[in-house]
Image: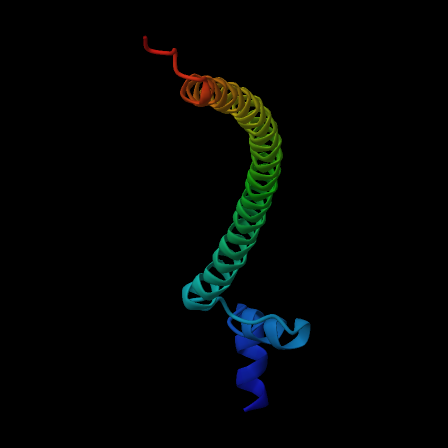
Length: 132
């Protein structure tokens, strides 16, 4: 048998298998499944990274919009309160002025009626002219 190995080795037929055993090399195999799995993992990783980035950007935009909305609402509330306060002040002032004017009219009218009533009483209490 040794003789046959020597003959085969000389012929070069054992050279490839012997070299692969000595060097630790493996024969080419169909690695498409393994390669596909690696590609799928990389694609998943890339997709997750993109999703995370998009989520972060969206959250940041929503946070900014919420902050702007809150500021606008606060400013509008402040301005509304200021306007309402001003309007209330003007309304109270107008009401006070109107009340003052009305009171003055009522007092004057009462005084006038009192004078008229007093004048009638005087007329009734005058001695009647003598009849002859």
